[in-house]
Length: 108
Image (tube, rainbow, N blue to C red; front, top):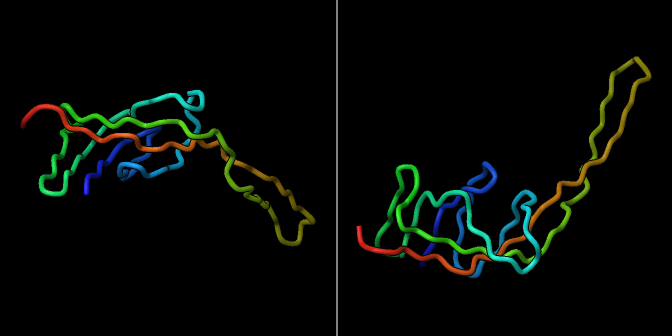
């Protein structure tokens, strides 16, 4: 099983070919191909290559599937005995990505 550990927008994700993942909003149109910021580790099932900090010659191709918003989160501030309540809502903007290809070019 081929998988990779990538970094995007300060977060690390373990990805496999064909899988989808949600990351913080990326500036790319639906259908475009993008690359992660860094490829930190690649495994082909037999050999694991760990980067220092990136794996040389590793390539992960991602396709933008959709630009969506996450679930609504309610944020409540409350102070006891002070008649103070504040409620706010928040929805994170996300990009849904599909892993098209994980490749390792060249030898060691």
